[in-house]
Image (tube, rainbow over all chains, first blue to last red; front, side, top):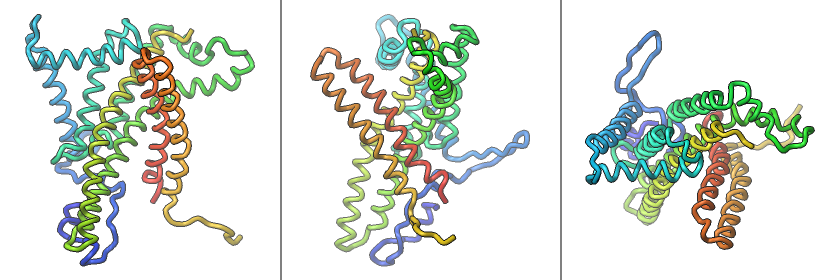
Length: 273
Length: 75
């Protein structure tokens, strides 16, 4: 349903008595501003595309500006950039992979900040659409992570040994391999990327839907009457609380995405022994 | 054959409610054991918190898949 028509229809509970216009999955399909066709594929430029371009420019621009002319005694922007990079290196890469994970820290830092700022677009007024609630974006990021950990596993353990090491974990009685091997292979090749993408998508989808429901509820109950004052104010208060909670979840999901990427890369580099 | 029993209405809500039982118990166990571990050895707080957050995210994913599936496959 289109929210510009919601505002003009003025469907409130008290005067009109119409039903609650609950937001559904339709609110995630945005109107395109421009369409064009390339090689037979139709492309649309809508708010999601503009937001994700802005997120990329912000992240790239911040890190380029922070590390443009690095000095031994860092200035303010360089300090913040260094703190950000060291957070990823110490808390995620070194904890999970060890010190030979240092060459993956740029990849992990890019993932973390891209996912976090893209999530943050869900609460910034004006934008208010978490980019990662469109399934395409988590899927693209997960595809990058998937190709990375499979190729690195094949390079560092050997192309066949990578799959046999994962399929036959040591220290298990031989009879259990009948049950364990298909589950392990399925977990390595299917469950990991699917759950990683869906976890990020579902968290952002659910959060956006919740905040939208309470915002629409505040508008729907808004009227000069007792139920209007109580209901609308309470609904708006819950919206504020949920926005705060959503900001925490956004940072947490970005951290989890990056942490799991580091875990998968570490599992590819060092075989389970 | 006539229908003997039927559930109508918002099946998605029932589905989500059922899907939230398991992860609710799981997350409770994770954080309960995590807090106990911190109480037994407060120096290991960083390591324990890392693993708690990892376990929480993996368990929460299932509840959220249950929330999203009715929108994707429902009418």
